[in-house]
Amino acid sequence: MSIDQLQQRYDKAGQGHLLKFWGTLSEGERVQLTKQLEGLDVERVNRIYQKAVSAEKEASNPNVPAEPVGPLPKDATDSVSNPDKVKDWRQVGLAAIARGQVGVLLMAGGQGTRLGSSAPKGCYDIGLPSHKSLFQYQAERIARLQEVAELEESKPAGSVIIPWYIMTSGPTRPETEKFFKTNEFFGLKPENVIFFEQGTLPCLTMEGKILLESPSRIAVAPDGNGGLYAATRSPLSPGDPETTVLSDLAKRNILYIHAYCVDNCLVRVADPVFLGYSISKQADCTAKVVPKTDPTESVGVVARRGSKFSVVEYSEITKEEAERRDAETGELALRAGNIANHFYTTDFLNRVEAFEDELAFHIARKKIPHTNLESGEFVKPSKPNGMKLELFVFDVFPFTERFSVLEVERREDFSPLKNAPGTGSDDPETSRRDLLAQHKRFLENAGAKVAEGVEIEISPLASYAGEGLEGSKGKTFTKSGIVNSVEELDALA
Image 1: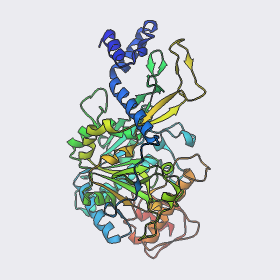
Image 2: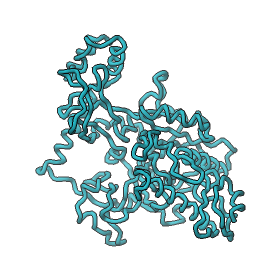
Image 3: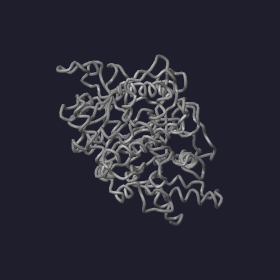
Image 4: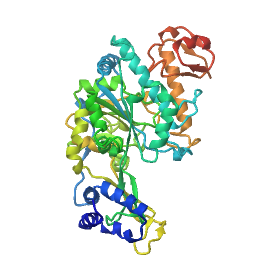
């Protein structure tokens, strides 16, 4: 596209100012800016801005009645409290895994900034005896689950594959890929670990004008974890514009997807129980949730907003709504705590594009460094001067046709890593504590005893969720240690 064509297109979109410094740019800078402008769907940016602003205005308009928030319908939700149901769901899920119908989407774009690390969050070591990273734990869970499916479904060794699609951000992709290569993909086959990139959107002024970071570069920011959906349609690499996550899923005949965030050390990757429940419900989208600890816990809940499923933020719920109890069970009526842990059919992921323009992005007003259009000087503002636009991964819930919810135990499924060491909640120490406590329960559930103060770390390669430890029955473990195979447990008794 010629510079005149670009200028005409951006003028028409009301964003012609982005070429204001063209006459002062070097040849290299011109190439850089041209590439950015050609790759940007500026008309889509304008649509997103208009939709976000109008949705925010409507939400804050006292004359527009808010849609009532209500609890989940009984027929759309279940829990893991019934062992017979759990056994049946697990069987259905393992069968789908064994047939090669399951893939995993990992949202891993964040850096460990709050943890005092500049590395991708998945590289973080929470202080386990093994010093394994979050990435390694999740990779080993996939490897073990492939084995379990082969054993229980009578498949040849090495025949079951769960492809792992890892969404990075622009800044974290090189280091994430290097981390996997250095660690030989933690035993997984490299062709079954697919990296792709979260999208970005331009940073805007309050009036919707795109900001320049420098005279030759647009200021951009990640488009939120809900950018996952658009990212599955984007080329995996510039050299291969035809191959996307969605095309790779189709090529592999994947029907079902488990999606989750990297910062949960307890995540059951491709959880067969969750998959089996969702498949049995014929859901196109399912949310795994944990019960709220109390009415005031600062967590969004999966609920009904009007006639549609939605995640309702804690700030949107009145005290009365938060404290309301279910007449039958006595539990909180709005208790389904959202943990960003989802099931999708690939059919549903393919349908998202059709309603994407109806999704309202969320506005975050921020202090955005930029180039002043009048002076050409770089400005670091002292107060919010612009906006970043984000989509959340749960924003698609209202558009589902068959939505369901599975409530699980927090201590078995959710221990997020959000805060700096020593914070006392959702930090590396609580992650470590919760994972080792789970391993102790695995042994106790198998009929063993673990002496007071003893810490045993069980590698996911030895047991995915407590299976295979039956030989420990009647034993008392008196020594701490790391167990990479069930045979190694004897040395700790």
